[in-house]
Image (cartoon, rainbow, N blue to C red; front, side, top):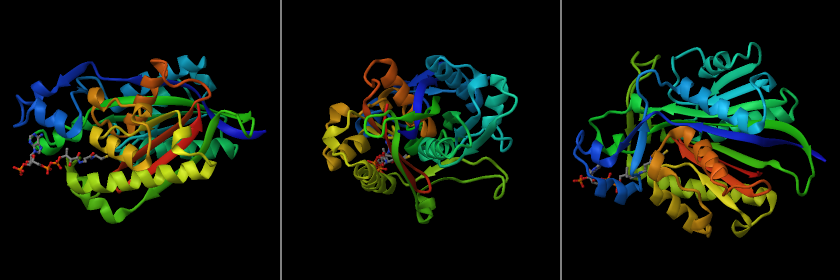
Amino acid sequence: MTLRSVIMGTGSALPRRCVDNAELATMVDTSDEWIVGRTGIRTRYIAGEGETTSTLATEASRKALEAAGMVPGDIDLIVLATATPDQTFPASATIVQAALGINDCVAFDVAAVCSGFLYAITVADNMLRGGAAKTALVIGAETFSRILDWEDRATCVLFGDGAGAVVLQAQDTDEATGRGILASRLHADGRHNGLLNVDGGPSTTGTVGKVRMKGQDVFRHAVVNLAQVMREVLEDVGVTPDQVDWVIPHQANARILDATARKLGLDPARVVVTVDRHANTSAASVPLALDTAVRDGRVKQGDLVVLEAMGGGFTWAASILRY
Ligand code: COA
């Protein structure tokens, strides 16, 4: 037997307001044809009054707990990945903790932008296997709409808001066939900070800032890095791409998903795509896509699943798990 972190339940949440490409074309000089052709995105959800990163995160967490058949009191660790916290501090994880009525547990945020959920689940997995906690809520939640420059058509059409969560529990599982996270790899290369960032912050401008991106450079790095890190986790557990049941990628751009799948020889039918509906929700995108595929019956218990993401920094990461 071996101690592994097993996903016991998933949940997600979206803001009330759905914005399609036609509506965006009334705000900036763009078109449905351009956005769909370059990115595959058709709609995104935008947070309105009263909707914040922590309210979306709390709703996703409640659904994940319900799916796991658990209550907030079962949780002794909350790790929340976000680049758009409610406030500079406290950590949004503690706001979710309070909303769930958990008075004492470990709770903190992780910042790795679009790779944030992969970083968060890897940190939680290590803490669970190390005995620091038994049952974790791992959340990716964002309100990127609040840091977009709504006059920059090259970025504002790409992003959306949302949250996804999983309940992760340490369990003794069979070494060969058991469920749980089997391997994870994290990377960062800060030399590329300038290609995708926010032009403000508490310690520099004293403002929140707006998203800035060199799209073509990001695209090129994304395909290479994502194929490389997926290859690493597949090799870690000795499986080939054709043995993977589902890939749950970060949902940045349909063309990145296609190019990465092609580079790795993955069957595109095995790649879960939600970018058309949700756009790029940064740290929320992987758990949102996972929850979508669990609830529509694609991802089943026992399936071999690869999660992957790449984001500002650059950071990039992948995990392989038996669901
Ligand atoms: N609508 C219409 N035209 C637009 C536009 C929009 N929303 N955004 C940019 N354009 C225009 C540009 O101004 C440019 O016009 P020009 O040739 O007259 O100067 C033209 O479209 C091409 O721009 P370019 O940036 O070269 O387009 P592209 O093919 O690289 O596509 C992205 C742009 C952003 C879709 C693409 O680079 C991309 O997906 N990059 C990865 C981004 C990403 O995923 N980031 C997150 C990673 S976590």
